Image 1 (cartoon, rainbow, N blue to C red):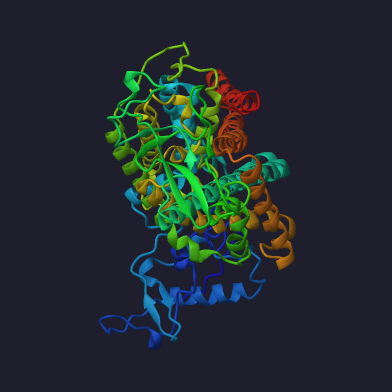
Image 2 (cartoon, rainbow, N blue to C red):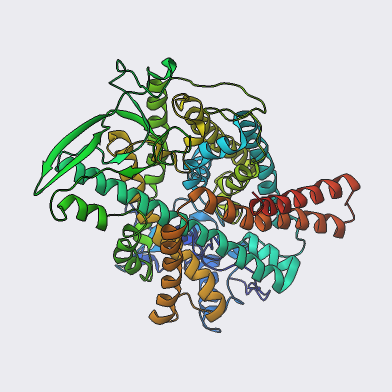
Length: 598
């Protein structure tokens, strides 16, 4: 073989592993082609038992790579073999622990093997989070018509900004950006400020999501425990809440007009002896919808009715120790804090499919409930009344804050699309995914708002978590809460792992410097979740604040600024492009400021 004296190894910006969100390893299986590819012929096995050999050139290249790999430490990326020196797929073999090697059928350098349909639904599943529970509330805050318009406009705007994120790497000349994520692009353009600011806003999005998860897990655990307790003790519902009755429609409601009789039945007071006490409670087993906030003037407040003739009963003890905001948030610490301290939460990644199942079930639940309740709409463009809200309301920025997080995928979209088999379809697949996400939000939000029974209940009764509008003993809602509770308990350690890797690796160069460092960080994150679940359990408010904050950087400011800077350096910046992208930045800033004024 002729001696090749040309240098084959040059420094590159990539690493052997495919780094995902904020330099977190994403899918190492896609990069088996970068491992040693040559073994002695006697160790090669195949299905056909034919002796498979590699060329002399491939054998020599393998020896060179081994030689260069010993010149530096494994952590040094300077002498990593670039993609173009690797042989063709038919020259590549993967080691077996038994000392043999197996031929690789195909290997796509740098890219995964996901089809377009898999990529689309992976983006859809990643984007569909807890925000879907607050979309009906957001539409109520904005008004039905303006809510629909805002979902469409925010979907298009965030899609364009996401497209700018995907294209940002391609606009950097003379640098290998194949393994870069968007924070790396920010660092390239803005230096250390871009690096630290992207870290800050990324932590806001992660910690904000974990706080929302803690509030929701407390809610779901509370309602699940309440359902089980009531079922075991044959208690229906112990809270007095206004609601629509699905079975006692023949009864008249003395406090409501004739139009309300169809949906609101007179509550039945029952007396039941439990242990040494005599208690009176309201039977609401057949209520289809409830109004926990009881915002309308003629409805009673959410409280329990209990007349006790003896000492504290088991029921009283249950209400004391099983409280949504006073006790249940603390019970979750015993389960989730140890899970956060695991070095690798890869086990929980196997349950990601539960996210898709939960969303599909929520769509099914919404459809069934709407079929029972019917459509209740009245178009009042600006006027207020007791049961309906105007079509346009000044509170619409609350919905835009929620939607900013609902459509937020900008800090990890490059990783998701990098595993697309057909890279030329990235823009198309991203657009389809955004269309499906927007369609899902529109369907759930519109159906819940339109079918909410007004009258007798006011549209203002729609809760920030629309599942709270269904009683705790509703079977379908119980199943939904179980699904979501288990899903969130598996996703929560993953979010904690991402936060730990980003923060600790930035400060200490190690994602797990010691159990002491990790424990302090996790206690702080858990403490934030417990505090919010205890004092501010409003997921709509938390979502809109965190969404508008992290969205200001990753959705509005950085994509637009980077695009304008790259055009300016290339001498292609025009006045229309400048005006449009400055306007986008101002929209993001106004979105954030409005959250604190309304």
